[in-house]
Length: 194
Ligand code: ATP
Ligand code: MG
Image (tube, rainbow, N blue to C red; front, side, top):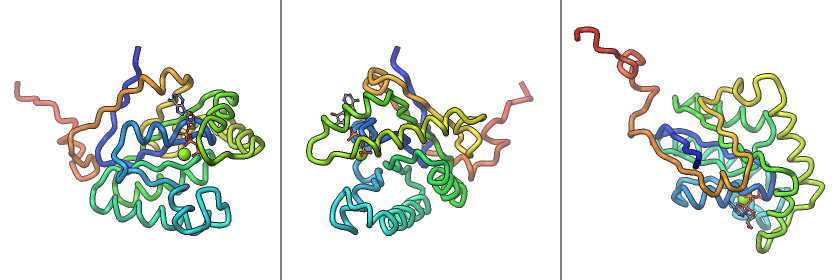
């Protein structure tokens, strides 16, 4: 059965997964290009290319600035970066908190082989297998901690473990309400007069 994810809109959608896991493919399939902030795209814009690790600092500062601006305008935003480290995810959750927007994680927790294969299949750029292994292990460590990613402030953590689940994924958006700006009592009101 297809997995269906419901996303509050606006929200910050944090993609999590090693290189080659399929984050950019998922983002392109389910979101408008303008909704996706990709660390690789910022590296390419600010450095020598998508793989320019020296541009990582400026790339993430620019990504965070763009995220802050978009959230200020109430726009759903997808962050396409590996986000396998808790510190990277916490920084994004904190950005969402500042804007009063919920943060949702979509974790591509595929096997290491699937990530290595995905990297080889991707045209153009390739990531060193040792880097993919390290990212994959970092994600496993995050997931195996007590609380997994759930204690990091996400309102939901969706973990996809099979390529098929990723392929069949359906994403629905909540109506355009801003949960943070609607009083809780209104959101969950039960009509007690009936
Ligand atoms: P990076 O972190 O390096 O940017 P990524 O997580 O964005 O990696 P993608 O570029 O989306 O990974 O995917 C890498 C390759 O894996 C794709 O070129 C494709 O060959 C394969 N792939 C990705 N998603 C799927 C999918 N849902 N079904 C089949 N193959 C896929
Ligand atoms: Mg990518």
